[in-house]
Each structure stands twice: as structure tokens, then as C-alpha cells.
Length: 429
Image (tube, rainbow, N blue to C red; front, side, top):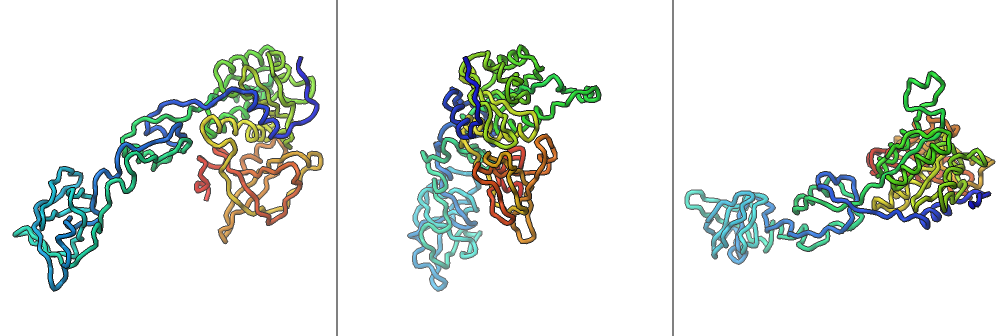
């Protein structure tokens, strides 16, 4: 018999209950390095080679043995025999004998026993007899990058959990790594509920409501690192809801339902889940204004997050409970680490009825003429999609905070897919 929870759970309590009852664990998959952009490494990457692989010149000039140029000056130049012109990429260069040198371009590999490069502007080259006069003594090692100076063989270059960037792909290719083990994206099942919903816009004229929330949540799943798995709309029927949930349990790592979440006997989602097995519903609502009827459940050790129907409540519940699980499964920190600080442009007061609830305040970010980042609060009803379209960040406000004053510094969270195309705040600035 299932116990009906009579009070709202804090977000932290709900998250802990989910984590303690699920067996979802990060998994790995192998992908081509060139397809790994934006993915997270499942293991450390160790270089099998030196970068650069040989000593090379940083200047156009002449590679010499340092002992041969000691004491060189304008009054007493030293003449060396030029035995070769080094071509870029050529590695089979014989060692120098004393008082020999090679002409070398920037990036050219040095003979194994040469240890100094003299730039062309400090010498006089005689093409006829292939000799060079050196008018200045340089310190040993001048204008050389040594093998392994950038990356040494057996050096760890990336740790497990590293988020692959464009420059990382190039480096991985440079050291010859063509495939990577990365964290596998979780399948996230989406079940919009309600007999009034449709995916066909032509049905709207006949009284149906377009399933826009399913599309919004699907996009947020994708940009947060998951793979959205749309199971189709479930009607207001327990058998239909249970059928969709059973399909999701077979195919998905996380399950989200949208709509049909309310208080009391009208909650068909909670009824459906509690009939399907234990532990079932773990929290019958959360202390989150605009999102309080979000519920959590577990069946077959898989998390089920029951999101409200109104768009703001659905996104709030997704941010509070779904995003952390998706992040943990793709190798990112459980909590969102992408944020910027800004000054709030208007006073804000919590709604009186839910002052002791956590709040998510959506804001519109802009940059002033003085290069100050401003955050303008966007206020509107829970079902108002314009709140979402006018915002590009959000402030998470703890339960005990009931007001923010104009000019206060605030921490604005940036949500992939909502704020920008990635987790990089530079995209906004």
C-alpha cells in the first residue's frame, strides 16, 4: 500500500530520494574523435608521443652547434659550412660535424646534435661557397622548441570528465587518437498527458491544444546532453498512461511525464504509477513556486519526474530535478556550473502565498554602456510562454529569500538551449 505524502518536499530532499532509489549509472560509448565535440571524456587521455616529436626552429635561420659560435662578434665573425637546406616536415637529417650547420625554416626539424638557431638577419650567407658568417654569439638553445616541450610522452593531457572543445579535437588528432570513450547520452522518455493534446496543428481549430510543452522539454533534453525519446501523447486514461510508462521503462534511462499532475484524487499519473509497483511516488510535490505539483517516482530503479502542464512550472521542474540527473549521467557535475553575475534592474518580491518556497526567477540579460551586465526580471503567469521567450537566464532563489532589491548583485544561471547554444557564457557576451 502506498502512502500519500501530505506535505511538499524540498528540492534537495526530492533529489536525494531520487538518487537513493535509482540504479542509473553513467555508461560509456566509443565515438570517432572528429565527432566528439561537446561530449565528456569517460577516461583520462595519455599522450603516446612527444609534441613536438622533434626539436624545431622558431625562426628562419641556421641550426648550429653552440660550441662553434662562441666568441662570434662583428669584429671577429665565425664562418661555418652550410651542408644542407632543411625542408619542412623532413626528419632524416644527419648529425652535424664541428663547424657545420644547416639552413632551416621556421618549423623545420633540427639535426640531432644541433642546439642553437641563429636568425637569418644576424648572419651573412654566401650562396656561392655555401658558407655563413655569424656576427653574434647567442645563448645555447636560442630559438628552439624542444621535443616534448608542449606535451611529453606519457603525459596526461585530459582528465576523465573533460568536456571536449574544438581545440581539443585538433590536439587529439595530432597525437594520433582517432577514437574516444565518452559518456553515453541517456535516453530521456517524454510522455505528454491529456486527452486535449494534439501534435497536429490542424486539430487546434477543433478545440485541441497543441503539444508545445513536449517540444520545449525535448529541446531542453537535447541541449542538456540527453537524447529525447518521444513516446507520444497519453490520454486521460490509466491504462494508456501505464502502457506509455512501461514502454519508457524498457527503452529509457529517465522518464518525464508532462501534465496531468495535480493535488488529490484527480492525479491520474500518481495513481497509474502507484499501481505499477514500488516504491512508486516518492514526493507528492516540491517546495518550488510555479512547479510545486512536480512529483518524483521510481519504478524498476528508474527515475520518473512528473512535470506540471503549465509551461513555466514544467521548465522549473525540469531545471530543478531532471537537469541534474542528465548531467550526472553524461559526466558533468550534478549541479549546473554555468552562470554569470549581474545587477538586477528592478525590485522583486516573492508571492505571498509561496514566500517560504524556492523560486526560479527568469531574467533578460543585457549589457549597459558601462559594460555592466543587467538582469531584468520577467514576470508572468505560469502558463505564459512569453515569460520564457523574453528570458535568457534564471536566478535560483532559496526558500528563505523573499525579496531582491534593485541594484543587488545576483547569480544568473545559464541553461543550455535556453540561454545559449552551449554552456559557454561568451556566446552571450
